[in-house]
Image (tube, one colour):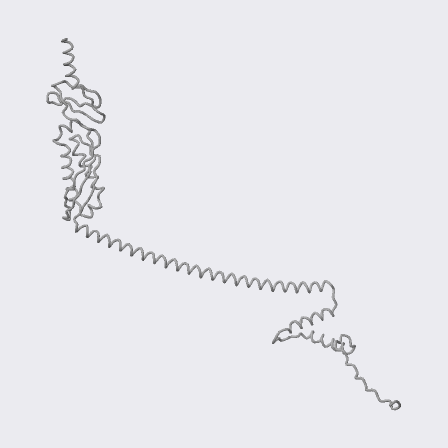
Length: 313
């Protein structure tokens, strides 16, 4: 009976003191109010009434999204900037005992660091130096939070909100810049088009000149070829006559044919060599003397009228 009672009391006391630590978590254990150990993931049993779990900590990466903070630039422009800090806890003991409310401390440290960095930059530099500000803030916060057991992985500027009048001036400036770029692009387009047209006209003129030159060369070559073929045909004809052994009379006839061909056409001047004139004269005398070669038929004598016969009338 007593055994059962003692066993029941033990179970009632021991079972509530059995703890299971989940993965990526750590429990800070205190013994009589003093840090004793840190439990990792797994099954653990604490001593009743003497030990207690001081803090339960997650080792996962966490995100601290700070609200927009008013900051003043070097040229006295007030703007609002909100940041996002990515961090994780690497030492549960330092995180528990290093600072009161570590998350609030990290948030305030982020705001003050941001003001210091932006205060060294002008408005344009702030708007164009996001990466620089992010890198500097990450290095500063990571170094400052090491004693709190916090590892800052990166810091990002989420929004940069300048005053309304600055926004209006920036919009006008951007519009003017866009108009200027548009004008430059149009001018460059017209310039490129004019250059292209000029080059096209130049190329067309060059091609036309080359075409005319080639045409003239082709015509000249054709005429030269024609003259050459005509002279060659004439030479071949004379050679054929010579090879055939023709007599002087045939050659004389050929000379006459050449003279007739030369006389064809208007306003033709004939320059007859002396030997050709002599040959024509000799042929004419020969024809008149012998009657050979005369193509003109002699005229027929007229028929005399019959006389009337007186005896028969």
